[in-house]
Amino acid sequence: MYDYLVVGAGLFGAVFAQQAKEKGFSVLVVDKRDHIAGNVYCETVEGIHVHKYGAHIFHTNDEKVWQYVNRFADFNRFTNSPVANYKGELYSLPFNMYTFNRMWGVVTPEQAREVIEAQRNAAGIREPRNLEEQAISLVGTDIYEKLVKGYTEKQWGRACTELPAFIIRRLPVRYTFDNNYFNAKYQGIPEESYTGLVKAMLEGIEVRLGVDYLEHKAQLDALARRVVYTGPIDAYFHYCHGPLEYRSVRFETELLEIPNFQGNAAVNYTDRDTPWTRIIEHKWFRFGKDDAGNDLPKTVISREYSSEWKPGDEPYYPVNDQRNSVLYAAYRQLAEQETNVLFGGRLAEYRYYDMDAVIASALSCAEKEFAERKK
Image (tube, rainbow, N blue to C red; front, side, top):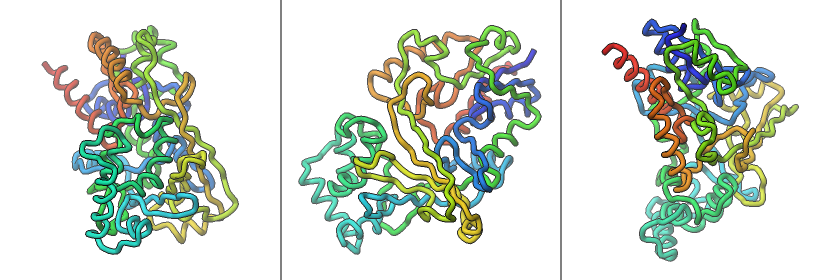
């Protein structure tokens, strides 16, 4: 009899399991995949850590979370500075003075502000009602048309006028030459990959892979006093209210017989006609490894294609529109009636999570759970 059955060996499950073990509880972790680490899983190809389920760059301002992850891994100093490719024209991301100069020829922050303000006024935007209006209010019409609209509509499969404004409110816009995409105190990638990070968290904990919890729910539930479930909340309840909607991502990964394909970890293709949203070149996630990277005679790239989710696909981004928010609330009500199950993580909570927020949520959940058990 285990104290906890943790369903899912991704970040939320691994953090909760580690905290439980540290408190002296017995834990069993199961995952239907054949590997640990969930969507942050990396596999090594020709000496390159390949982010199998898309690029993951750790960034946080949370001191507690940063200290926690550094217990299990050394992080490099990778700084995310993606590039936007619009029909062969290259622009800096985040949007900054390099972007504004390339777009309009302006050389001072004041000139850039004047252009954006003029374009915002010409569009007649006072209170943004959708993503298009939010984007124009932030960066003007020209940048929206070239660098936001096509990419966003490919990613979400919907017109920007049909998407809520909040999706793009975190869009970094800087009137400086700072190319760091994330405004975070700490940033980097584990030297031994995210797989190594999660493996260290799960050290000494029993993990069973290739186990579908929902197929064997009764037998597995009988093994533990409490369950921590990190899978899709609608699947847990047999889709009784209907399936929640997601956007999914398909990857085409290639091993190339050249040392350098694009010279950067991430290049976004922002025109509507290019079918992929971005290309990741995995070797450049290793900060300061230009010379070492070029010593590796090969490179690995992944083209990313956004698609509407259907059963059997991997769910990535929740579609947080009104319909799905109401649907999730109905599932959440059912979850609150489950007296012996904790629901946590991006799928169980139907929300987009940055990695540091997942870890913070798992630490908080564990702390609250163990405090309750002491009573």
